[in-house]
Structure formats: C-alpha cells, structure tokens
Length: 344
Figure 1 (cartoon, one colour):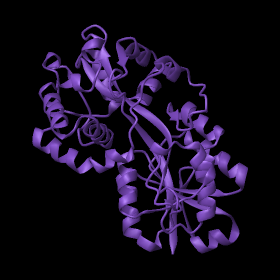
Figure 2 (tube, one colour):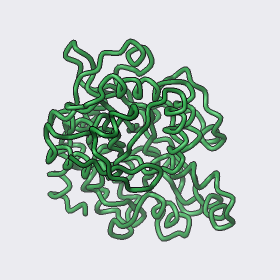
Figure 3 (cartoon, rainbow, N blue to C red):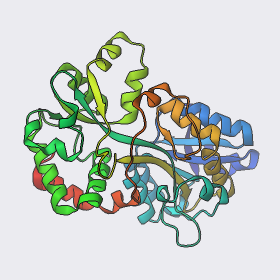
Figure 4 (cartoon, rainbow, N blue to C red):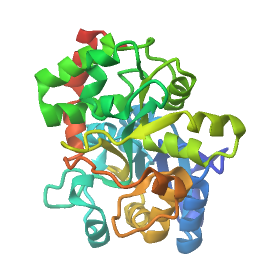
C-alpha cells in the first residue's frame, strides 16, 4: 500500500511498511495550513526522533478521506480547526479514546471530546474568539456590542459576513443556539440577513477591509485575522487597522464565542503510542506558546503566558463557558435555519 504524504511541502510516496522499518513516524492528517506550524512539527521531531508525515486538506476533506479509507487508513493523528468538525469526526467513529494524565491535567475539560471512562476522543490545543469589528467613523461600539445587536434594525444595511454556512459561522450560531435557544437564534439570523450591506462573500479579512473602506459598518471575524493585521508592517494594512475598532461581544451576558483547533488519535492509528506523544507535545509550554506567537491564537493551557503583543493589545475578555461539542450537536439545526431565513 502506498501512502502519499506532505513533508515540508513536498509530496512523497513510500510504502508504509518500508518507512516504519527504517524510522519512527506518525502520519498526521492536518487541516491547519499555517507555515508557522512547520517549526512546531520540526521541534517535535528534534525532541523525539519521530518524523511527521503530513497530509493537508480542509476539515471536510480530511473527514471524507478518513471515511473512504476505513480500517486501512494510515492516519495516526487527526488535527482539525473547528469544534463542530471535531464533534462530527467523533460521532462518525474516526477517533479512539486517549487516556493521558498529561493531557487531562493541562487541557480544560470543556475543551475535550467525549470521555466514556477510557479517555477523551480529542483535545483542544488552541483557541480563538469570534469578535465584532466596526467602522470607527460610522458606528458606535455600544450599538454592536453583542451578537444579537447585529440583527437590530438600527444596523440595517451595515452588516458584512462571510458565508453563513462556513464552519466558523456555523459554530458561532451553534453556540448561540446553546445560549439563547432555537427561536431566538433563528430570529437573530433572520435579522442579520435583513441588515446585510451586501451578500456574504470572501473570508474574514475581506470583511475587515470592507469595514475599513466604509462599504460595511460592522462585521464578524476570528480574532487571529485581526491580530495578523495589527502585527503587519505593510502601509496598506496599517491604514486598515487605523479605521476599525474591535468589540468583545456579550461581555455582560454569556461572553464571546470561542472556537478551537484540536486533535485526536485516529481510530486505526498504526503508531498509537507515538501519536499520543505528539498530542502531549502539543500541550507542552513550548508548543502552546508557538500557537500564540505563530498564529495569534490563545493557548488552551491556561498557565501558559504568550509573548504576542497583538493579542495583548486586544486585551482580556470574558469568554463563553460551554461544552464546545455543543456547537457540533446544534450544527444540523443551524444549517436548516440558515436555509429558512435565506442566509447565503
């Protein structure tokens, strides 16, 4: 059987038996596409001697590939960037439980997958918030300080978002469902559609730039896109940053929505022991700091302090406290709502 892997951006082909006979490896199926992660993985290999063969795809592509490969899958570790997709993989039986004192001590219980007494199915290793970005000239921050306010008629014609069905938004709306219930969530989505300045298009950075240009008054974005622009030294990015403000949503109620990047050991992992070592490495202080400094995410391990000035500038905030798997459980209902209200 041939295993196609990506190592440092190069596609390789090798028999899995031949590789394992020569050196220790784990096969990582990863939805993280950040160049800064190369050093993260390289440091693991230096520390352990375990080589990482990486297969890159988006969350949906990885889940589909794992299901098609079945018991013959060479995957050892599955790394995804959305709580709802982690939940989906768990429910599709793609993970196996991991019992690790290191992981249980360092990763908060609400950032772990289901545990039936034999260990958790997956673990969250970094977090980011879904923040509200507004045009400082045209919008008052107090008018957009909650997710619910984005549906308020006073913000008609001001809202821009990426596709409602994008995983980042589905997870946000799934969390809203958990906080405020079905009827209110659908009313919020309907109001957001009525307030759109344009049809949903592009990614989060596009929404931020549209706010800065005045095409939109307010938008939703993952926090690391904001931090990335704040750290940029490009004149055009500096100009964009000068024109928008950031609101931490729902600070007087349930807190800002937080999503995760997380990983688990694949159900049929051929190298389980080394896969667990990799998960434990991701929970180490050094790796946790790398998530923060390399991609502007917050460490899942609360004791780890970051050296990221952009994150520090954004300041402290109240985050929601829910079982992140709830966003997955609510996913199908949210998608039906989006269809009913016409949120493209």
